Length: 65
Image (cartoon, rainbow, N blue to C red; front, side, top):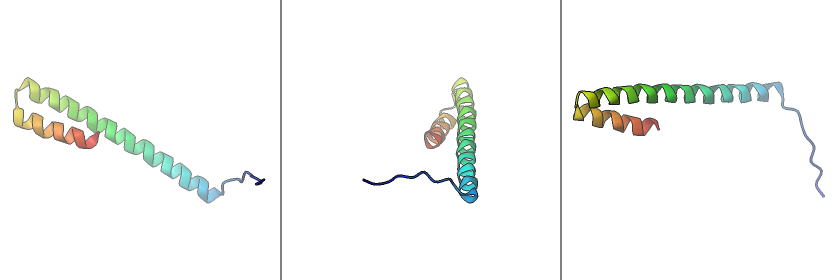
């Protein structure tokens, strides 16, 4: 039977783990912001009946999501 022991993370591992978590949160926040901006612009293009802009923005939205 194998003996599983827990080991504490080193200070360096904690720093890397925290940095990775922070980067993930930041990336999600940026994606959410970009998505919200694109949705607003898409709504505006629909109101203006601007098909070219609508198509371009919906393609950008697909890339963000």
